[in-house]
Image (cartoon, rainbow, N blue to C red; front, top):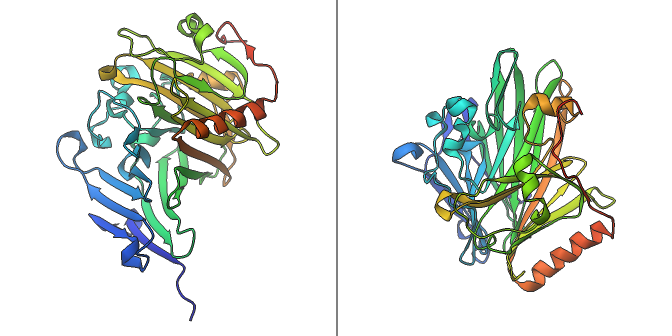
Length: 388
């Protein structure tokens, strides 16, 4: 009889009416006393986070907190005393039951916005709008869809990888039938984690969709004179406000009272395998966060700069997507509204990493420069217009 090579456990499954409740497992329980892996699930209580599940992965180097109740968003990542995330005025991990997306003219999504990584989509994303009597609320419904199934796995042979595999479904009669299968992989001792998503149209008709990976970072990565770096082919201001900050679009201010957010639309160069890299690092270039992704899967990159006061959310967003965050009709007009054929799927792969010293930041900068390879960056001085 062959020995088992993978430990697997279903933590919740709506089809089976199954929820294991508070639960944990670690390497020693699996006969791996020297392997620093641990997975735990617990339920939050009190306030608007009542009933929210938090799933925590540990690999001896990093601790990643996932939110199955909120579309498998990542709440935060902790490593060596640093926190990858941000301080939103929203302090609780809000249960979707307390979110009214239609509030504030379709901006109710903001009532729960405090994650390090949140998906915007799937039927739509971007700024709210009305079209044909339909209110498309800010950034879609994905962040407020509880996962229908969550399974955890630990390989019992090197490299002893941890995986979380989950299903998130967005289904509305006569509108859409979309399913996201997401897999997050973390290896012991690593300061990188990998996300592999598959979005499938389960319906019988072609389905427009939008997907933006809204990754958010703050101090100590973000500070006065921190820098954003990517092999940028073209940068365009999102609106007139962004035009005013265009000269310093790659650099950040310190916390600034009354700061109005700036958004820049980027297209990036990639290598022969369509891979590209973006990073944010501090002023000393000895601490940073990197994001590797594929431009054939996510061709558009949005840079969100919100350097308001710390209490109001001092944060920057690095957001690869199938589109930009304009309202859905605007994206359709500009040819950026993707369509999934009936039964078809699209794959998305992203790797996030923490850069913990000058050498690691320097290597990432060199990788960006190698992709750029001396090619120019075109700077567009005005926002795109309707009808253009």
